[in-house]
Image (cartoon, rainbow, N blue to C red; front, side, top):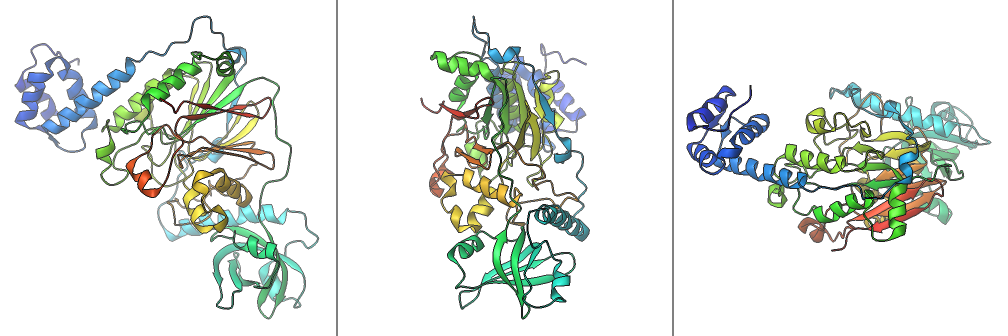
Length: 507
């Protein structure tokens, strides 16, 4: 049934809200009738869809009107493809293959029971142990239970999960590791070679690791540390002259979202560029990867509402959808969630739910993926995740001191450990039966965000990209001493393996 705005009286407004078991304050009705009679239908519709409680106050009406006008303002920004602009990528057939087995969407089985945690860690141990057992070695891998019954000082390789690492009062390092059968204390002397002691600093709790050494008086004397790691290989390239653009952490809804700068990016991707070389580069973009925090969300941190200009999460996603629909249809868009998005805060995260992404229906070039996600773009194996494990690694590995300004360094350590969040408990992780944060494949590209600071690296043939943010510096970041790099757009050439960084962050 369509609501007729003309002649909508107080009684009709009260009746329609009462049908949905909503009580409306008299001054809220006065405000609707007196100030927004022509918009009353849309306003009431939005209130009914999004009401979080049984009471409709004037403040709620005003917030709804403000958010509605904000969305309308975004819709009025028309980003059109430039005349006489024929992007080269338009004539190249898209090649997207999404590996759903990496995606937790529809597969979450955790109930919070002890068995969930046991199964989670068993799965991690089994998967990473398999990698370590397949590493070339003259020793082979010996089960710790068998080693305990064997001759002392026999050289061996053992594999286990780190239970605890500590430094003794005499300066030695003790690492307790365990497998499904037993545990074993492992010893690194303070007089060990410098390289071994330095490597020991990189060991973190809950990761799966290998040690070469020998057993002596109940202690395993470590001579070498082995991580699962990725193999050394040449960077993979493709024949077609296409490019991949990367963005993350738009934080739409925040007063610090850089709307004008992001609009300039959309104009660029539609061929509106002053420099001929930039226009040519825009025409090569075939894929756009979005690594989460597309909106700022609601109630993510204390007093967040003071920093929001759009206080309704549905409107935030409505605005985001309008932006994404401005991207040319020949560009394939892959969108994952972050900790500010309308999914569970803990990793692994499912795809953005349909109630927030209805506007994408019918857009075959827009693909929603979970966090983490693994997909192939033109044959390039791409790992995309938001990056929640960054801060726990940076806090526990001395070599990552100051990594906020070089976030790619933490991602390299994740590749070495073959895990996106090895330390359990310092950032929320749901103990699923399958460890979705384990890197079961070797990626050609790794893309993440979360840190709001761009960073790039190449490690053993894998290109690592942190795409920064489209949010300017917040008061909280200033207090923490963090200086983001907003508006920096990395574009990866799939044919040459090189990166171009365009700056949209200026005024």
